[in-house]
Structure formats: structure tokens, C-alpha cells
Amino acid sequence: MKSILLTGGARSGKSRLAQELALKFGGPVLFVATAEAGDEEMKQRIESHRKSRPSGWTTLEVTTHISKSIMKNIGDAKTVIIDCITLLVSNVFQHFDENTKPSRVEKAVVAEIKELCDCIDHSNADFIIVTNEVGMGIIPGDRISRLYRDLLGKANQMLAEHVDEIYLMVSGIPLDVKKRT
Image (cartoon, rainbow, N blue to C red; front, side):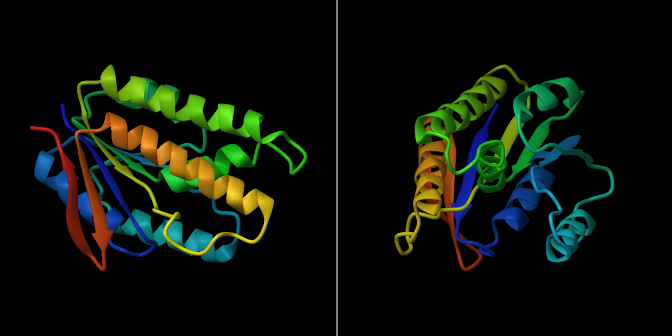
């Protein structure tokens, strides 16, 4: 089984490439959506993403503890798309307040990603994982944003170590970062 991490900036073509790869790998496909519709604009984004997916795909909307949900719902899926880790880490953050010790938040994020790596290892499906690269911009001005950036970076590094292939999306073009032979 193959595991692929797609990273890059916002609107760089990661989700589109994930769908193209899934079509190439063949179905059935389980699409794991981690977004929550917190406002009208996000509702519209989610609906646009839904419409872009083939109707035959199974969609699983889950915000945290995604590995347990995947294993319960994977069925006969040959390909699993997770879109996206960026929102998954944000969702984990929502369970804590600004007074929580950063080490507690980090522990929760690390546990979520370790569970995902175990899920990949114990599944017979190919995995395509979408995430954003947020460490290439300016240093955030507040403590919580810096912690989020750092923990998403840690999650991305954990996944990068684990997966077979990594592509960095730049303006819709995938750049090959890692391939296991």
C-alpha cells in the first residue's frame, strides 16, 4: 500500500491533486473531511469541495480522532483521502483554551498523528493526505498562533517521516520531495 503527503500553501492545488491521484489509484474511495462549517464562507467552501468529488465516493466528516472513524468506516475502500491535517490540528486546538499548557496541546496533536500513522500501517488502502505548509511565512504575532504553526509543523514532520511519497504543491504544480523506492 502507498501513502502520499501533499503539502503546500493555501489554494495551491493540493485537494485537486489528491482527487486526481485517487481516481488514478481506483476505488472505492473514502474521503475524510476534517472541516467544520463555522461560518457562511466556510459552508460555501465545504459545499464547493463536496460538488468537486465524484458521487460514488464515500464521505466521512470527522473533526478529531479520525483514525478510529476511518477504521470503523473504511469498508472496502482501496483509497483514503484525508483533507486536511491543517484543519485536524486546528480542531484539536479547539478542545483547549488559551490558558492550557502548550505541552498538553502538543500531546493531543502528537497522539492524533501517531494514531493516524498506525491506521495507515494497519489498513489495506492507499492513503493520500493533504496538509498546508505554514512555516514558510512570517512569524505569527501571538503565542497561540505560533504554537499552532509549530504543532502543525511537528504533525507534518511526523507524517513526512512515515509516508512513502511527498509532493510540495506550488501554483498547481507538484514538486517531488520524497519517494521511497
